[in-house]
Amino acid sequence: MWWGVAAALLANALYSTGFVLEKRALGSLPEVTVRQPFRLLRLVLGSPLWIGGSLALAAGFAAQLAVYRTLPIAAAQGIFVSGLVLLVLLSARLLGEETTGRERYALGAILTALLMVVLSLDEASDTVSRSAPHALVLTVCVPSLALGVWLYASAERRARHRHRLPTTGVDYGVAVGLLYGVSSLAIKGVSSHLTTSAPVEALLALLRSPYPYLLLFTGAFGLVMSQAALQRSRASLIVPVCTTVTSLFTAVLGTLSFGEALPDDPLRLALRVAGTALAVTVLLSMPKHDAPRPAPQPPVGAKELTPP
Image (cartoon, rainbow, N blue to C red; front, side):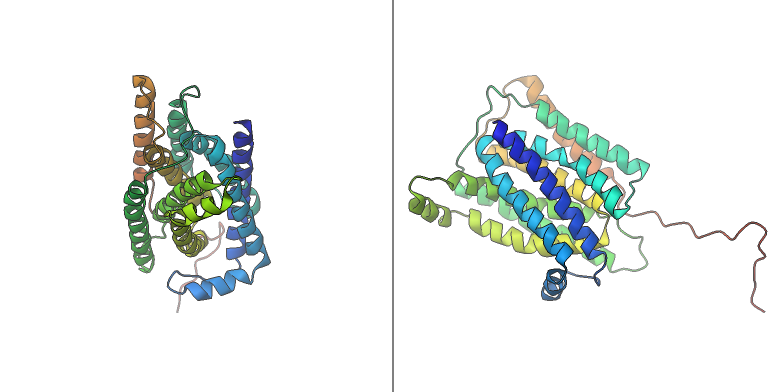
């Protein structure tokens, strides 16, 4: 179990570093859009800083495989959430991003909600499941992917209306979070097929499962969607929102799909349900637009120039 905790903390550091490096690289690139995916790939692959960030994210995915082999899904998500603190610190230090007071309260409430989910765990009774019915996994994942793509497309349509206030990125974060939630379940499924005994049979079983194909879909769409979203929004907001959606999706639906039983104790069950409801409520109440910056005021004593 301690190896799983160490792997989760390592994944946190890799994910936070990767997102911040990609965000910094995107700041110096022309505007990218999901409607031109090949142009987007050409631009980002020409940036060494972006490549470094993507390699850090890939290493984070590899660490996540080790996590899911040693920790229950919900417990792993509780540790992953701690990476938000490092993400906010890195964003402030390297990107110069500042969160508003309302956003800090909202993020604090989200962390409280996820803490409630973690407190609902019982180390003595929680077990690590190795399999899930493929039909159930697809029933959970396919509608979630469709909802994520639809939310992202809706956010893109609103962003194209120039008369509207600039979006904060909450919609983008929810959409990408749904895709990464599906990806997280797929990583859990892949990890269950990793074995040193009978590797050929294990590989064939993996190819007969939906997990590698879900990873391909979420990898391709998640790459394009996350880059456009990061360029339009602050990493210190969009990544916590994305992480929250991913964590709740994986902890709740992953627990059900892989049969890692819900709490029998009424208090633990109440904590899990209340924590989920609080996180969703906070996400729905977060501002959808950045407040417009006030116009610069002329120096005191300066005369206002009027056209003749």
